[in-house]
Length: 386
Image (cartoon, rainbow, N blue to C red):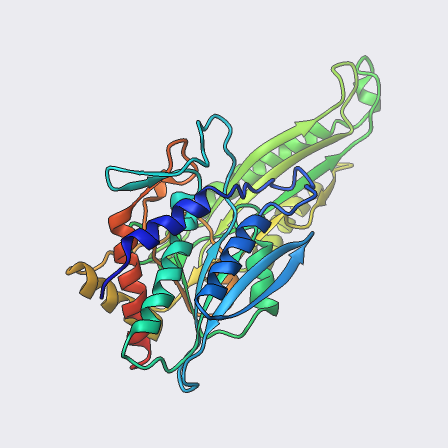
């Protein structure tokens, strides 16, 4: 199998040169942040002769995909990656991509435009292959992974039907069939504001929040000693932001915290809300005039858990073994990803190290990109035989 390294790196350099920085909900640009990437990817899919389609997710932001048709008697396999990147503050020339000492540099090179470039080469090799393609292969570029993952949620609900998904998040070519989920939301306590010289006449929302935080610390400690998931370990809870009060001379009538709850396979969003509500009600029973509000989630990503007996896992495991000549590491992916939103068995495996993601000197090894292409092609061909 001959991977065209020049074509592969040229595609990646071109994509890194297209800014697609997620605004994280802090701006409403006239042109959607991923649109230039969507247009480039769309054009490359057309040039490969695929059936190309797209859907607007929100505010003009489009998921784009191409379909390589098989013979109609095999599984449909999704190769998914995201268009957006994190920000570039403090990054010198983030979109000036180049190859140096076997690495491609620039914002998004590792996370995860390398995966998108690899997918294009996968399609070319499948088209050249003499092995019949029984099922379809769909290559998709997804919006908004770095923020709320609305792109993958929309694709899972409204996109084309698929049977399996490979997501090329950077894993140093290790296989990740599982990762924790993530629920982010805010909790607000409300009181009554009065002049701080007469605090007994008011209700101090910060004091009430303090009581709640004490209870939430106990909750976090309890999560840390629950029976761990075999791959993902323990669930966790963290308070990341706190704000309250208007000025030092007034009793605060509001205090807000923003919390992060990491779930493990087997836990659901409903489980999390039930646990938090029980804690809030317990505090309310102990404190007169304790009033609170629990927001809707700003992020609700379910955990990923793909069984290692799945044909997808077996096919990918064999492919990594064959391409790299050694047994692959099977590890949980540290962060949350688009993968569970596709609502099919999904596995994460991609070029590049997670340590490079979001850094100010982002890069991906070309050698790992080449290996990733071979792994994806081999895994797809393996799936045709199961």
